[in-house]
Structures are given as structure tokens and as C-alpha cells.
Image 1 (cartoon, rainbow, N blue to C red):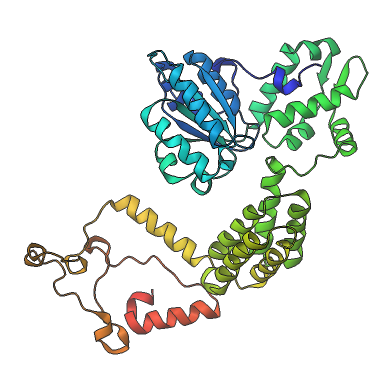
Image 2 (image 1 turned 120 degrees about the vertical axis):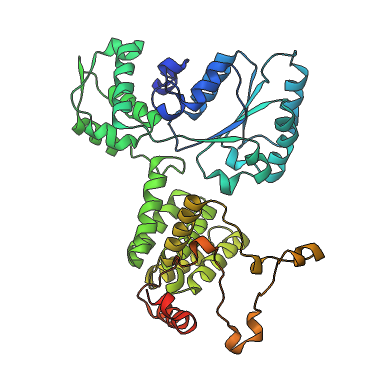
Length: 424
């Protein structure tokens, strides 16, 4: 049985690798490491079909080291330990450690990830992980701290067109069929920056046509995909499009649309934890202080889904979805922390004012630590004016109330306590 086109076109060298120039282009960080012949452990984070697995295989081929692969879906802790033992016993004092590639590393349990730590830390293996999910949520901190993180981007239009040209010029099967690309808008649109999906669509259209030459048009692509509808793909571009539509419907206060996109995800088999996590983020980012109960309800929905499972878990998700969509909206906390981060990056590590420092030792007290600090509870209304920001930025405003009843009350309280500072 012939290999799929996407597999036949998998590049073997960096020169044939398309896209991700920020990582593997001339002078880019990963390219330099590979050319130097030594790499450290790293995790590749990006959507499907952008070359994560291919890049790992190219690295192993280039470095000429043993290459072990584990699937996070089918491998247990024992499999991890077996591979590590093989890597340890099979290493003959070579310059570079064997590479252990773990696809979908976000699906590894904590115990599976823990079992990797020692081998990665001591250099028994060089770990390359691939994930479509944010590693900050899915990879344990000790493992994440031992790996570089590289973000892969969806392929751009020029990358996809180059890939199509390569397929038509180099693939023996396509050359025999005399394929002509007359129009590319539809095939590019449906691929969504996913190289594998692009080649799968091309193959699907070509196989359904017995013409000579086979002329690929937008109409043919749309027609063929309608006859073979693409199912909801939890790892595909539709996953990202639908969650985007879901969150934007909540932000736009449209509960009907939000429920529709929720149903699309539920019916398509989306991970309930993924949906619940996005609800918690939306409650903080989009509803925020306009209705602080939104975060409580979203978090409760998350807990409920984890406790009761599927399919009943759809009900608390729906309750949280409607509540968030119908709540007043504010992103003042989101904007505030972003402004604070920008300030910190711009001003660096400014010293903590002496009166705000702890003074657990006599020497610290002699140096003025904690001196003149005013304990708020000793004053009327549990408040007294004093400086809490570093001297260099003491007049900076970071949080600005937005126009909704809940924040209006908060703003009134700040003006009553701080006066002119919060009138600006």
C-alpha cells in the first residue's frame, strides 16, 4: 500500500524543510545549535502540521545519534524507563546523547513526566517534546525548566505554495498524473496553515479525478471536501477556529452563539478540560471586575466537570457559558497587569522601599528595614496613606476602572481613599 502524500513528502534535511525560518533559517537559534552538532533538550509548541515531528527527525539524522520515539497516548512509565535504560546502555561515550522524541507530550501524566527528569538532567537522553497545547499548563515545571521552548507558527501562504510546488515537482505519483494547479485559494484556506492537511486535500482531490491533466480548481476542492466532510479535529486548525469563535461570542455577549460553538465542541469530542480552562481565562480576561462572580462560577464549572465527567459535564459548562456571555464585561485587570509587566520590563528591578521590607534580624532593623511602616488596621477605616510603589515610579497609574456598576463602586472607594491620584 502506497504511503500517503504527506508522508512521502516529509523532508529529510533542513534545506528541504519549509517554514519556521525564525528557528531554522540561516543564523537562527535552532539552526546554529544543529550546525554546531550539540543540542540541549527542547519542546516544540505549535499547531498540527507545521513540522514538529519532522524537525525532530532531521535533528537526529543530522547529529547521527540514536533516535527513540514514545507516544504519550500509548506509553506508560515502564515504557519511559525501558527507553531510558536502552539509551543509557547503548551510548558509547559519543559526543551527543541519544534523542528521545515524545509526541503529544502534553498527554503524559505527572508520573510519566517525573520519570523523565533524572535522565534529562544527567544527559542520558536529550529530550525533544512536541505539543499542540500550552506547555505552561501541561508540562510539569521541573521538566519545563530543563528544556528550551520553541514556538512553531502556522505555515504562511508562501510556505504552503512552495510545498505544493515541491509536491508536484518531486512526488513520483503526482508527476505520473500530470497535475496542474489552476487555483489555490480554496486549498490554502482549508489547510489553515497545516502542511499535512494541505497535502491530504491535494491527494484527495487528485484521487477523485481521472482527467489528464488533472486541473485543480477552487470549485473541485470545495466539492470534494463537501463529499468528504472533515470531522472536527481536536488537534487541527478547526480546533483553534472554533474555540476562538466560542470565546469571541462570550466576549461579544451573545449567549446563543456561545452555546452553539460549545455544542460544536461537545459534539466533536473536544477535551472538556480544554473548554473549562478557556472559560476560566475568559472570566478573568473579559468579564473581570465587572462581575467577579464569573471567575468563581467558571472555576466551579471546571471542578464539576472534573468530578462528574462526560456527558453530564456539558451542563455546568453550558451554565458557565451563558453566565459569562450575559455578564457585563471589563478587561481592566487584564490591561492593568499588562501595563505593570511593561513597566517592570522598562524599569528593571527597582529597590523595594525600606519601610515595606521585613526586618527579621536586628541588623535589618538598624539598617531601617520596616521603619515608619504604618499598619493599616491601626487607622480609621483600616486605611492610611503611604507609599507602596518604588520611588522612581511612585506616581504611576496601572489600574483604570471601566464603565460598569461594579467598578464604579471600586473607583469611588479609591478616590475616597487616595484623592487626586485616582481621579486621573
